[in-house]
Image (cartoon, rainbow, N blue to C red; front, side, top):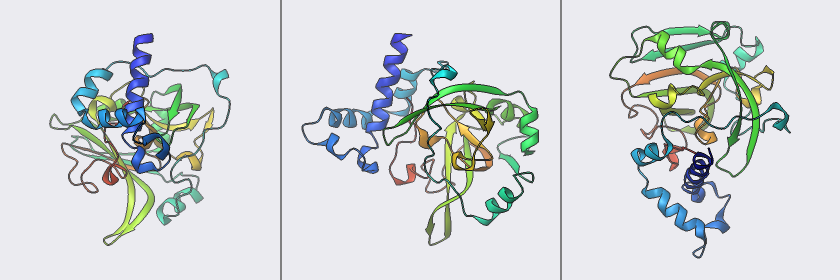
Length: 259
């Protein structure tokens, strides 16, 4: 176990270091004489396959005891979407919410929150590691993403799962730029990857992504898309955003943020 945890910390340091110049939160750490600069340079040379080799495919992120939840889960990113389709759903307590699952699947789905809650659930107490340098332990309850993909019957050509979200983070020439993220099918089917609708024994709060967010416990926080409106299974990321796999990845962050 110690070997795995040391490797997890090492990979987390590399993944976080690779985004330091973008976040602006750790500028003193990347001074010319800083050891972090060495980590940063190393992180930039790690390929996706190399990180996969180090991380492995079947390891679980550490889970904690309920007594270790010492504070509310700190919201990150957008915390109160003002997009009208989202506001309309929120006004009705998300009773009309539907999650679409389309793309490279044989059985497209349209699932209500009640549909998701009727499926087998997983509850896990894990640590959220933010690229900004903070962490927080919380309890998450939701439907394993793998079960949803099984119901949709993923095509053999599929490689990625893309999460399309309600929250607009920017406005471009072509219109609103909404948050999106993606993971590969290996992470999508990991037992700790869940579509969370509950947090700390209650319904998921709006500030933390209601009605639905993904938890990818072996990756940094920006990978865990909130306010999910649709899931698309695909063999390529080119058609989404600028083709880099996520809102922040389009702005220079690493796509595979494994820790």
